[in-house]
Amino acid sequence: MSAKWEKQEGNIGTLTIEVPAEEVNKAIDKAFAKVVKEINVPGFRKGKMPRPMFEKRFGVEALYQDALEILVPDAYSNAIDETGITPVDYPEIDGTENFAKGENFTFIAKVTVKPEPKLGDYKGLEVKKSETVVTDEEVEAQIEEQLARKAELEIKEDEAIVTGDTATIDFEGFLGEEAFEGGKGEDYALEIGSGSFIPGFEEQLVGLKAGESKDVVVTFPEEYHAEELAGKEATFKVAVKEVKTKVLPELNDEFAKEIDPEVESLEALRAKIKEQTVEQKKADAESTLRDELVEKAAENAEVEIPESMTHNEIHRMIEEFGQRLQMQGMTLDLYYQFSGQDEHALHEQMRPEAESRVRVSLVLEAIAKAENIEVTEEDVKAELEKMSGQFGMTADQILAALGGTTEILENDIRTQKTVEFLVENAKITE
Image 1 (cartoon, rainbow, N blue to C red):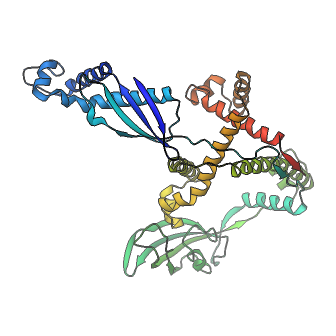
Image 2 (image 1 turned 30 degrees about the vertical axis):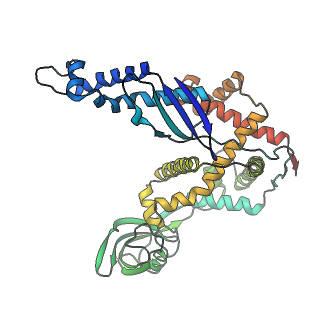
Image 3 (image 1 turned 90 degrees about the vertical axis):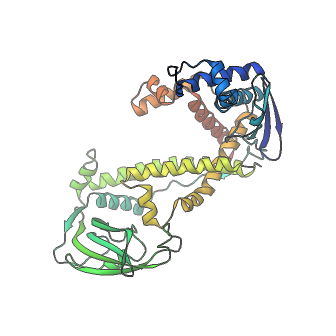
């Protein structure tokens, strides 16, 4: 087999692949072994029809499609290895109509490859490290958050809903006199002011009491994912079944001990929170500094990002977002319903971030290559030991979870070392 790579415009090129007749015939043999098991011919047991009889009855051409499906992927994979290119999308295959038994087979793959950035300035970049001062107001805000987390919901007897209360409601939505699909719910616990429902819905429940009902009139956003509802006025018939309010615990030494058994008083808790916040701010400052350096290096580079790379990154981000929603007890479908978005809108919302991620990844990879940043066996071993301590797993278990290879781990380590290189060569002011 031989392969020839020709770069064309942008990041697209053609891979011309020639497969010798011997390999073509082997693929046809494999195709026959597969097909003959699936056909029934009177006089023969399934899978036992002789090859000459098959070709006389159906023609050898009947095997070509299966043979191509066997031959092309392997030939394409070998051609990638031979030419050293890095595809970032599925190829467009042309020339399969020339496939024939006993003849050399040449086909063309149109391939989008990983771009090679033209690096700009990445050494001596100027950045300013963030302050790490913690105010008393910040400490009190954290304590208030802890109070809110420990709050209990208490039923309000014959008292009106106020913002912050949780109302258990039944509701059904109507366009005119007709109920619409997906607009009905029962025993739904809605925190008033959370922004979970369509704008204007929650505010209209303020002032109602348990046992009362109201027609809530809202207008769906123009960009709402369900076209039949977008921009339209709807009426929700809402029945309030129960109202609960948050009751905060008393702020005293006992509360402090409950939050952190290692402290003896509220003042000790405040001091500890302040110390921890300082450390967190220092870590955040270091992280922000690294992010700024990476962003500057990426901005200074020239790179044309293939749409396929952006598209794939967007889908990874949507998958991650969906997983986070599941951890919160919500699905993407429910998110679309409550936010008024659809998959396309979320796709476009994530596009800028996806493009930035791809650009950064390509530029860091190029810097690592330019500076000969390598990953050693000791680096991998140290990272595995670190992960073992973090996740309570053995190195072998971690490797198994990574697919039995250290490639992903090596890429992560190389990225970390490249970022450290940028920090070491930056001009940092406090």
